[in-house]
Image (cartoon, rainbow, N blue to C red):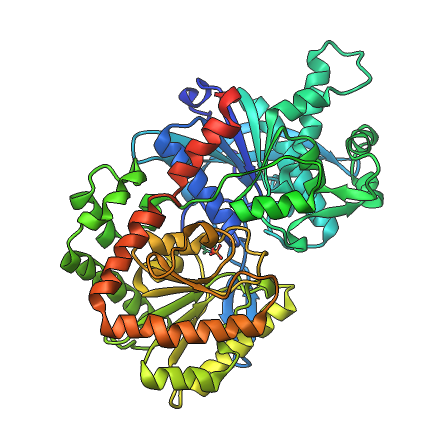
Length: 570
Ligand SMILES: *Cc1c(COP(=O)(O)O)cnc(C)c1O
């Protein structure tokens, strides 16, 4: 960070705000500070907040090395390359500095300001915390480099910077913050700073922290039932890095816990807790008995995820949809020929990407199935490849092409194994099978092409692990039909044969049944409809827009947060 720091524009300080804390936020395609759905959702959250003029301020880490740039090596194995970016290119440094004491050493924290501009003149400031300052110890300068990298200790140090440093910096900059929204548990250490603040405000001399007041101010959204998504730290590590009074407070708040569990901390100190779909809230209630877990189903940002060709069409037929996506309920008013033409435009721009990225020319007369998501166990990315002979047989009757993309976390061996399997099967299938293309380096930019230009959007997670899933909602915004396991949002969105199709019956673990159901549906329903009943297909595209996009958008989601979770802060 250079010394040329700016003042915070005064107008940003005029409103009381809700601070939205997230380890990752996908601010724009050019800023690689996200790893997947959590970050993209955080970005869509703030984009809708800007559009709706909800007074939020985002807080995250600058993650100078990005998440990872993915290449596939000669051996078909994923290479993890750094994906550095230059904060000065997109943000401006803001002149306030605070310290966080970590392992007895003061770590200085400063922020970059990114102003997220809404389509209606509103905006949301986002602070990207940075410890790469000359006054810091060389080791501490690296704390805001890696997203989900390093070891447990590195992660805890990062979470101290995010939670404690974030609150201090907001205060130092003069923000008046009414409520705190913890997007996942990574930022839960912010409660320490809130507790301290309330202690001071009460005139000192207090021996107990007013945790009720902290609780009143916190909203916690949990995003996954998957174990790896919940940070835990041993008390030994916590005691080594944190000040004794903070350790005491945490032990008090977490009495009886054998470790510092960030989810548990967030649960205990938030008055409002929610899961990201109805099924996910139910699953979370079972995982965390004794807590009231609400459901606010995720959504995606209309303007970000509707392809320009589709958006132009909505502008003509459904005036006002950008601010009020509920109006998409009128999707049936769109002319059949026009919607198909817009879809062809989106398909053509995807085909161009595939040519440029993989040197492959797709066939204009065949449907494209897309599967893109983080490559990790519960997403079951190899499920459709379970029986290559069956895929060949289906392809002989009704030819199709399949696009696959997704990154594996650098430490996720099985995830990388899945990628290798897919790349190898793609090669095998070249002889008399469907064309399968693995597109490296899945990110927001590639996602925008895929969710608009495919015909079918496939999802095959292991229920009930897909808390929500959001890429299928992006597909719906483009009239791309979902073919998905009944889990997460799809339990709420699927009307069989109308908005898309279900795979299996949503039962816990029935891989064989799911594989069979997927092949049967593809062979007997999906592909025959594409080839034989184009009118029905187009009708379904409009149902997906009118019944799914109209609801599963982040404007509706943020209006829900405003009325259910934020109302006493607004
Ligand atoms: C939307 C999105 C995701 C999340 O997709 P899921 O359906 O939840 O798996 C992940 N990565 C990128 C780049 C996205 O745009």
